[in-house]
Length: 392
View (cartoon, rainbow, N blue to C red):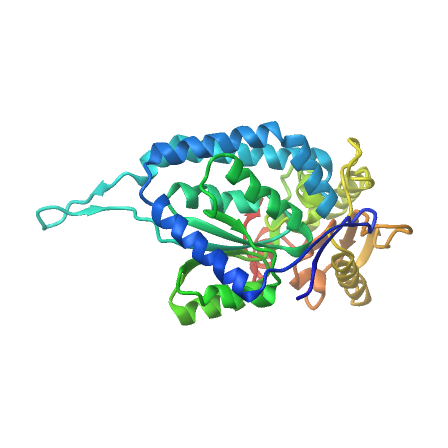
């Protein structure tokens, strides 16, 4: 079985290797999780709440250690990594505070003598999670799932296996039963095998459209519940009456968060003709001011991309778009030296047929699309197969 390797994307150094479990070991983990679930589902909300509050405390206590782990494994700037851990602690407290109300039976008026809704745990939930927010993406599934009385199995992205193991340890140290939440260091090709296990009752995935289709297909054949969050290419519309300096700052911030590796970040900037040139000038200034460098440096705003292959794919999208007529106003070149770094890049004159127009750019590349007027801008914003949001 292939080892899973965690490699520092800033230095190309091997951090750790993780042996995949055998098929027998993986099935034994499912059985252990199920037996633990059968007891956990009987616990009171107050018992579950105590463990989740302790999880929040541990996140606070270990914030620096866990933030550094995020930065080493996937390159997030250390200040952003601390913010991610703090957000996970907030999430745990939110569900600890509100779980009793969320799970309370609800009486429903019908023609029957008594009708009500009751919320019962479903069982083992399999989570297939990405590397870009390696703690947050897991906690936003795990906290509510465990509070509802379920068990969790985590298949994390291979390059953040250390984060997966640390999350399992957090839940265990906080007082959740052994086996209730398990991290399985496995490759994507083994997800279907887990989904097919009759004791795995549901799946949640955050990832690419391709991965989502594969999970949806398998789960659909088995009539198992799924929650899928796939790629995004959010449009930001800049109209004639916009405060252009504010718009440029906000657009740059949204495009560069997590080095541009965010499903819900701004990616397509649709600007009406009347303010296009001035906005591009201001936007370029904001992007150029961002500091690229060592993600452990407190002053760094952009670290490397999470893996060299992701950087290379982003560069291909930039180069192919330029070959089709896009203009590069900033960046667009791979820096010399170690690491999967890519500079803030600004493409203008982006149009149909280009990767920058049709594909998700998962990195610090901004695509500016010129619109004739407001109605044209709206049509351009809707000319995409992607969600997840938009802004004006």
